[in-house]
Image 1: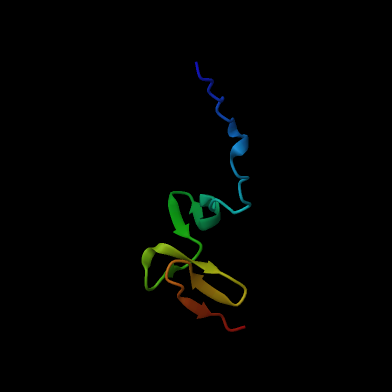
Image 2: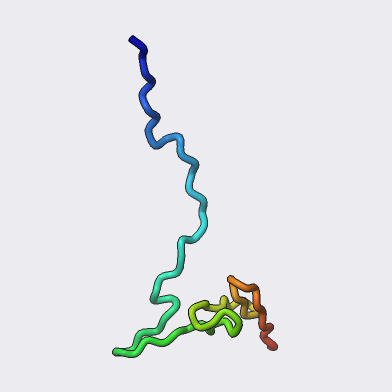
Length: 72
């Protein structure tokens, strides 16, 4: 009879990276009563389903890389 090695437990997997999984709905939308509004702008090229990220000196789309610079 041949012996089989026992399967390794979960210790072989790589450690999870420190990346964020996503934003909570409360950080993207404002809820007041029965009305829900968006906090961030939507991309003019991609459409209303894609949010633009707000940075210190620019507003940028993460999908198509459209950028609008903010004048201060």
